[in-house]
Length: 615
Ligand code: ATP
Ligand code: MG
Image 1 (cartoon, protein in one colour):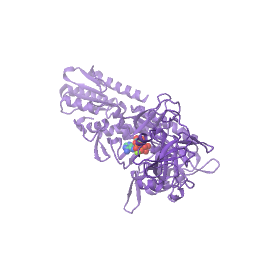
Image 2 (cartoon, helix red, strand yellow):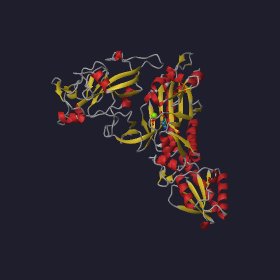
Image 3 (cartoon, protein in one colour):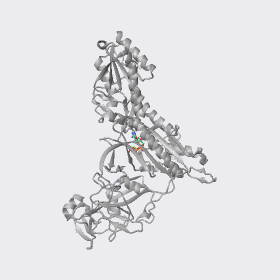
Image 4 (cartoon, helix red, strand yellow):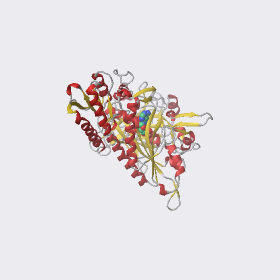
């Protein structure tokens, strides 16, 4: 390609709206332009890199036997009603109506579309396992699209779905996917950290995320320096820690009865520490949560029969709205993703003040665990753990809690003696400094961005959408399922995050829009002749080569090509002839090589770099 025949739209200034390197550089190098909030157009150079990322993903999916399909992006809403997600997906899902008022969804993900396909095509166990994938447009009405294509509203995702007769077969595909993902990210020059992950609204268990470290990362990774434990904070667990009383001694069970202490204005944990002269580790705080679409059975829980249980709209019976009290040690925070997972809910949020008073009798800040009758209480494992025989291991003793009425706290509250919860679970937010549950070492943490996700879904969709097949004995069975996503745009942006310098992008060979650029100092006379012949030779050798034939000053052309980040540059200048300059974008210095050898050398560099990435 000659630059005069394509669109080079580089910008010298950093666009004000872009705060991260990849967003700035994608705009400055003319790879993308903004069309609307969270909506982008890829320009020719950007699209070339985009297609390379896409193709590497495609090659690795094909290599493990996944079959490419292409469902429509717009999907009948009816399928989402069948799975139950019409009600649970929330405002992130774009719903539209056509001229005959049919409800349609612009795919945010495609479990429903692919499950519906397999339902029609699958009849016998002989067809299993089936692994199907697409690389297709997704739309999510993200509240805050940001960082360019890193978090857009419309983006491209590779999403694969697998169907299996049994858990072993699912395990096999899951492991093959994990390997394929590692190969994909290696080929793209991306350093990823695989972490164990929450499976969120998708449901199911057994899930891993592939993260890249990033200071603007939306996720927090909890990492163990000793045994390699790595988890998203939405999933991370920790070993129980010893807590002490105000004298630094192990806490002992309360012997005194509960004492009501008037304490107007003492609302926060910090205020309580001062007022009671006790450490936060000896308080129990109780938070009231509004819980959406919980699939737990609450019929025997306190207040359970006041919540509406809905089994009409497909999917498992669930509570469109329920409320829970959550008790946790005073110095800790509730992790809402862990809480939602434990409650099998699509979403949890802190209840509004009216609901807090309605359910607990006290305003926020004075809610306690004692005497709650209108809603179920979940105790975090920092407070107590229910053992298999129904007894409890208590982890905090002789505690201070809200008094269950305004301006009163309770002193000497003892778990079990004074209250028992409906359930206990681990819902605390694990932070750096907490202890690894596997080896006891202290965690550290990093910010990261999710590039890909693999998870075992189990029967969630195949059951709710009635997928069956006949097994060897002619008996009807339901297949189990896995799903596997990678964001194409986000992977592309992450490559730039990892590979750039002060002058622009430094593409790994696998994702560069062109592999080699020839820059004649002036496109005329002998320089033109040599540039043209190098161009022809490289094209002949199958190298993706750009010839910068623009009538610009050499400095302008060098700046542009550095910004765009073409890995190999050949400069043809009068004063060096019969030699030309060969320079790698990643190196500071250039080499002089005879013009007759330059194409061969450049081609060898390209092949060696690709081989190293693919190896
Ligand atoms: P996040 O937590 O970042 O919103 P997610 O958990 O919603 O991600 P998945 O549903 O697992 O993501 O989607 C699979 C992949 O799609 C992600 O790993 C990511 O690479 C990509 N992706 C998700 N949302 C966006 C978005 N708004 N813009 C660009 N890529 C996205
Ligand atoms: Mg998301």
